[in-house]
Length: 256
Ligand code: ATP
Ligand code: MG
Image (cartoon, rainbow, N blue to C red; front, side, top):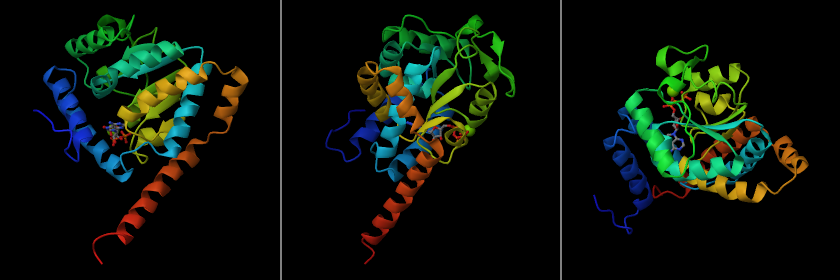
């Protein structure tokens, strides 16, 4: 489909097209398309912009990743289809490993995501096929599989659009979790150490931008940024923002 830049929902339609393409290529699954729909609804409520609380969470996340001695980016189908280029860029800036970790795991899909990341310049992609031979406690079947050199070993994990019980299982293993989740009410959002309440399409390029600046900071500065961040307060700011915005819209609405 050819999209007109003049369409009022051009950006949102462009993102949908990327996901549909990912679906046709076997990178995204049906459930991923549905999850995106839920995300879009929250993006409406956020005004389809990165708000100040998200930017603060982004800075704290980059500080945390730069301070970590084993950072990792966990990649699923939607995240790969939407952000592969910036995932690879960020991984290089913060020296993080990349692992494919799918909710609906098949070897074919793992390999396709690996190929996409390699095409974008990734040197190594963990978690594909036989490599994912470790299991994490608390989740059933194939969803529990992880790479012993990746998620199992990492101490700080960046993930996006992740399911709540997997986030919970990773927290129980003592991992520091940074989640990009546009729904401040989801279990993942509540469970993570740092939650970036924003669309991953906007958050990732901003993380790359911040990483370029912040990698010149000394450890003391990074620790200070992290110390001043409180995830509970940040999530409550996101909810306050949504309700404030809705009240304003209600007041200014056409229902006179
Ligand atoms: P949870 O399992 O954490 O309670 P959920 O069951 O509502 O969440 P999942 O499908 O498990 O949803 O996880 C996907 C999450 O990703 C949802 O919270 C959804 O709002 C969010 N999401 C969807 N699209 C995007 C996007 N483009 N950027 C950021 N977050 C997104
Ligand atoms: Mg879920």
